[in-house]
Length: 145
Image (cartoon, rainbow, N blue to C red; front, side):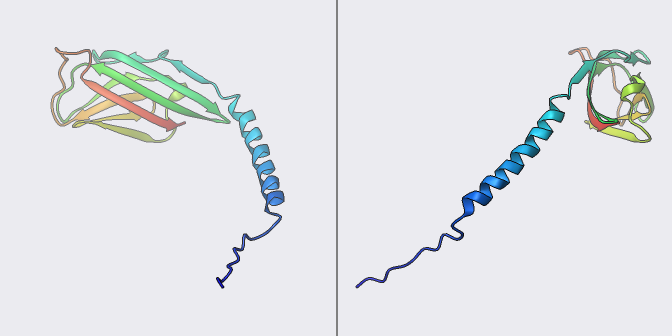
């Protein structure tokens, strides 16, 4: 005669506990949904001022979360900068400037940085106006201010 093995499934009333936990999870998600439904991204290029002959396309988007902003700032720009010298490229509006810090982004051998409301570049080689495209420097920053 073959041995009969009993499989133990654990607690028999698991569905009551699971339903209770799912109910709490749904309530939490509804609260978050109430907050996230209010989040609206603002996209603009207002207040961007190019410096030292630089030009191009710079756009920022931000969402207000309480007293902070989550900012996405991107640029494809063109201009000239000398090797081993810091060159200011543009200013950004005060409402999206990082507070009390410097942020850096590396593009090939160029380091693009934001300090206060200014964006500048320091490169290992000369950066020269592009003759075969609309830009010669790219940056993308995501930060909280």
